Image 1 (cartoon, rainbow, N blue to C red):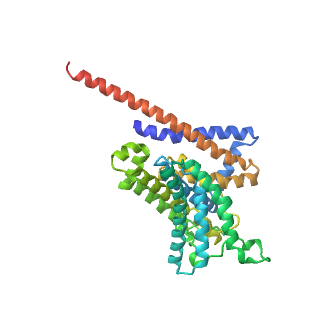
Image 2: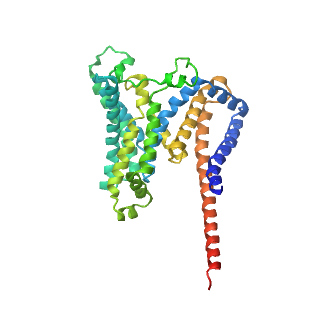
Image 3: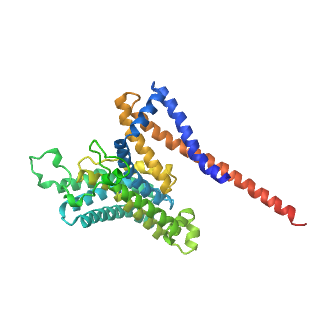
Length: 372
């Protein structure tokens, strides 16, 4: 019961602290907390809004899994942003150039995205294992190279045949045929609910994200590779003594993280049918926050992704109703992350103190039983 209490104390404490601090922030901005919370909850109760939340949570979750793979080996992969954009761009370009049966077409596009993401993340892994370059520095630089260099240059090269008379809608890669677009799963959701209105479509990448979460759990907690990866992160020297090659594990973890990152852009690709001139950015950094809030646990990250998506979607309704400024949702995301870190830190300290006291009591009892 005590262990269960410690497990529940952190998330419950984080929730209550978030509620208190968010209420103070709303009052400071001259908004009514009751009205703001009421608008957010009533908006989230609509099925169409729930579809928006799931669509927004899907890339957040994939990004969090990508970051968490590095975290489990004590690697801080800041480059998820660049890795997913590079995978998105190449997958869209290849997908627009080929014509295949639907299953094969979608499979090829996803494999290309994963390979490109893995290779781009592998650069940071090679730099760390061969030259000792810290992955934080290398992945930050690789983000800048991808966003401000390679992607801009490659788009210009691939659009060289547009000529002088073209519209802004033609910018980006070639349109992908219908066979290459992952179908929506509205029908699956409507089995349990009602018909989804307002033209909302639930992305099929939601099922892929669920599968990725299951594979992440199985790989890291039920396989030898996962054990070696976690052991290398906890104590690389002990892992090396046990026969685990640390450099190989660093490279494998970085490339696996990049492969998952490559799937993030598939949500937008399925929706827009190409790599647009203005792809959604910031998903890689949101994933880091979601992974930290979810404690690298697949279930915890799913909850965190849904929470962040809920706050993102709610920012629009707050702005339209006038209950509060839409920026309050961003502030609440920061408050959630900060309070979670504080709550988990306090819970860990209390648990360690409790375990130390139990160990001391057990040792004292053993000494009393053993005769002098």
